[in-house]
Length: 147
Image (cartoon, rainbow, N blue to C red):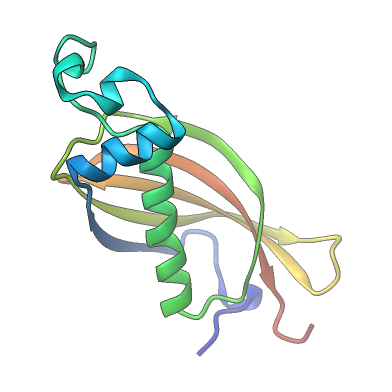
């Protein structure tokens, strides 16, 4: 059953995951998009402020986004994309072998000036072993049932 704007309430919270981040994937992503030594070179990373290889924050965000999209597809949300994100925070590094999961909480809901859509803002928090590693507020657009 599809979840439309009318079906969503502020405070709704769901948890989803998991996704295991590998060393090869960390390096491959960083070499292409964020080529800093603490993301691309395990030996150089030992001497960095991270004390070891760390996933790019953008990589962590992308992996969490994947979990979010899979969740929305599985739960059949009537998502129509997003207006952006607010308050992106990289809380702690993600390491090779870490298992990511996400929690999604509806923090605000309002009518939209876009025909047939409502605005639903969700705080997405990524976790490793119940410790937050990333968070942001997604500014979602959700179709209305009778649009």
